[in-house]
Length: 141
Image (tube, rainbow, N blue to C red; front, side, top):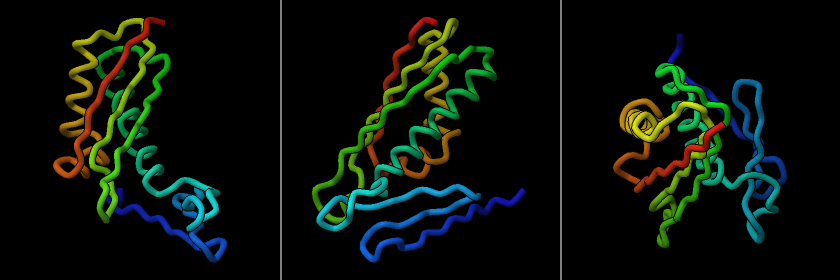
């Protein structure tokens, strides 16, 4: 299995809107007016989606390996940008909402620790560069 991933973008409107493609899937990125037309994700929003989905996939995978049921999972992500250029994220807050009939705090804390320390590649890429805090709530199904 190759360790390379490929993606490409193409300018679509002569301003700031790009169509991204990877693996046969597409996504639109754009900026808000006056620079863009607001017709897609801003790149940093798409990064938050990527981070949250990476964490979600990791939680789901590890829960299954621990014989825990995840009936539903949603993750909110809020990024606070730096005030100086480059205006990347200074901090990101993640909040996982898990619906499960058998998940407990101890297991969820173990899952999150593993996700943050060694499993989620998106999290590993920003570790030490962006402050990340993760909270969770467990709801009985």
